[in-house]
Image (cartoon, rainbow, N blue to C red):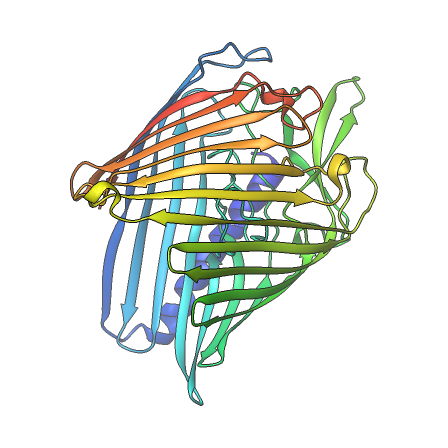
Length: 417
């Protein structure tokens, strides 16, 4: 087993063991309530075009399982464990396992408010926009799961929350850095040279063991919801560097810098309007040219919903967002200057049928990406999702040019228990 994979598994196993020992030692004599839930997925993808790179496959199918065990003691504590495993028939890197959650939670009162402490592995989400979650930085992206970057790896942490009428204040100590996952040689939606997952470098002398710190304040003032966040630690976005070994073989490796990020996310509800904003200022990151450059970026836009269209129970939403990164052509993000338009149709029927279709248009290049997603419940436990992503006229200068032939149609059937 490669050293990095062995260390990663050991850290996750140690986190689970520590959580169980802590819970057992403190509350072993109490009666414990338990609940088992989760999901099983069967999925398949079909790429209509031949891959742009050798060895890429047109079809992929597999399954995923994510059970969740929740234990609740008689006192003010609980324990949650949620492992994840996926098998993929085409890409060996997409066959992987992760510990999404494994944390001990305890809580109590403090003055007129409440406090809550989570210790272990957890997932935390920040953000409000649709096209990308710009300010979301606590967890690492599990990129082999989906190119939309919404799937996240579990993050070892201590998470303290204090809430009262004046808002919610959160503090994070993040104890181990997770490197991003990437498709392998047989996978689609990859770079021309597959990215090496085993050789990862860090700016910090402590490497992946550097302790990252973060804090967040959030509050709701009538129709206005907002969050203010700061993060100081190792970036979740890698800088990709070429490497030539002693045999002359070229590979791409991940390098992670120390950064500081200040961010805000906000949402204003005005009748049928939802106005949204995510913005950040980041210090210490490298740009596409490999030079350190502080920068600002934002996503802003809104959604208007027509309720009960044509006298039916259905709602129709129109969405528009602008993604902007002031580095522009020096940005190593695909959202350097992009416009997003979408239509969302929710039938509000017993099957919770919903369709969303959107276009992401690069304002600096000719690239256009069309996405269509249909979700529907088949029963109380079964649901289905049909998805299509079409990459249209990908510009040669666009950062996603290597994936120009990787449009796909995907079918996912889920059993929830």
